[in-house]
Length: 285
Image (cartoon, rainbow, N blue to C red; front, side, top):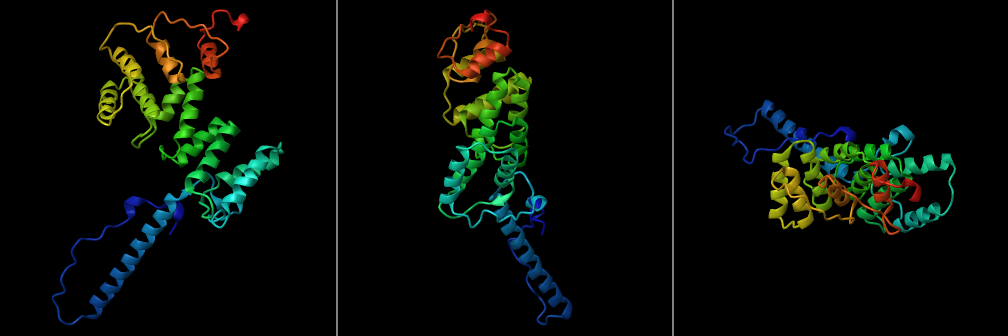
């Protein structure tokens, strides 16, 4: 069984009732059929086991390509892993050492089982990806590991970074590729806004209705949503700096938008203002 290409659709489900054996004597052919059925059941169980293990795999590279094994981390001690990575962060690595660390962290492997949870190990990978700052590498990782709720920290970082550079299309490309239910409210707002931006307003309305049924309540976002959907033409002058998405919505829903940054203004908003040509006096900033 190829563990890298397991297709859940190929997993065969058994019928809830078995056919009754009507003949009292079992012929040679029926014995053969019984053995085949046993083999089939074993193959089903084997595939289900491998599929379960696949869910516990996280990474980007095939271990065979780098002379590694899928269980390379299985027997590692979490305390030692955390201690080693903390030490590595404090020193300047050579390019070769950086490449080795990248391959070690991003090779598909089972999670270590000693003194570290799956969530902690995933957090190490995500933190390294963010600190490394390679957007293409982050996108490749998300393509291979599409679980949005496990990777929400990385997704938020990436879409915020692109939006702060006024690259809304890149942010929305990442967001709209999400096929799972999004639990995170911030990513849900981003998703709904990207649907509106793509002129998929009926879907946007449906998504917001579902979120509200689940208790979502954001007065600022609701006002921006109503304006963008054409339900309300009144311009809201309120500017939110809580997130880059809020700031962007403040800008896009106000034709006369003006904002003067100060020392407390976040770097992402400074970058957004610059890339959106919203800094009136660049020399004084």
